[in-house]
Length: 431
Image 1 (cartoon, rainbow, N blue to C red):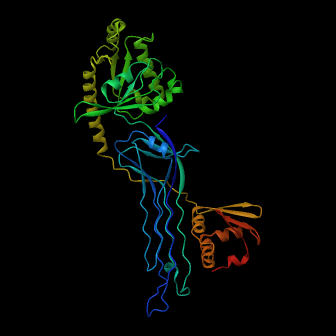
Image 2: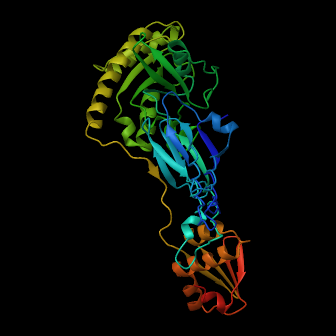
Image 3: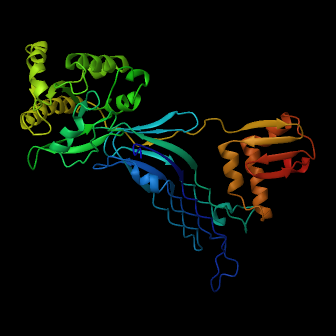
């Protein structure tokens, strides 16, 4: 199962309904309206959390719905706002719109947030509609439904160190030896189909995250083999360990393998070849490795290489300590750059700027837009006073004037969201 992608349905909580209530006390026979407003529905929010590396929880819980706001009450008591639903995701999570693949959020840092589905606002209680000419309003707004959104999540794996090399080079074996990870290991290509993470401990206080990533072959930058999956996952690693099969178990030349891997990295993203890279000469425990070892060392000349056996553990401690030391220098440079960068605020997905649009379909006029939709959904269609207020809102938005300009005539149908009504000239004059 691929646990670094997930598709989820999110829905913000509905706002609480406004309350219709009048003051009723002894010696106050005609108390005014005192219905309170409803509370706001909860938002659905993604938050980057430390210690999370996969999206597997969303595989089992693909529906994420926030709580509703409480209804308003008498005595001007407003309903309580609902708690937001916070969904924890790994650092490096990219949020996309499934239909268009548009990226709507890129969550990189621990604590960074993105509001995915907004909760609905609470409806106004009848106390909010009192005026000098409207002393006893028996009308209140319904709570606005929460926003609904289906999104796809994709984790670009953020590990400190990535293992690169041809399939069967020994990457999984090295990960298993240096960490508590238990990757699947077998003698055939593409044993590793998804990234495996392991925490490599130098001691109780010093450690780093090592990623064994799907193997790379010639043509990977064009998607051959597991190319795109592999390359996508190493984009955000800080450094690479390039594992070479010095024993040529599969009959390939170690130097050619090294050059080909770097060529594929360069073709996919030149930045990858600029990452710090330690060269690891694996499988020195095998007899054939001794035949190639000196030739490979001569190829790298003065460059530091690390002969090891991931199976027996020979040379592994030296490699791990050198990796940690280089990683510390990289992290120090990153911290120096981050000190000059301001923290990113919570990301809100923008809503359309246009108030509404009008679509003409013969004798049918469809009104689309956030404002008219909200007005309709928050109206109690069984309440005559509420219908009067709805027409006032539509007129104030300019919807009724737009209908007239579009040539609407008596008897034509007007649709706003799922609500339909028959147009009559009298409705235009509603005040």
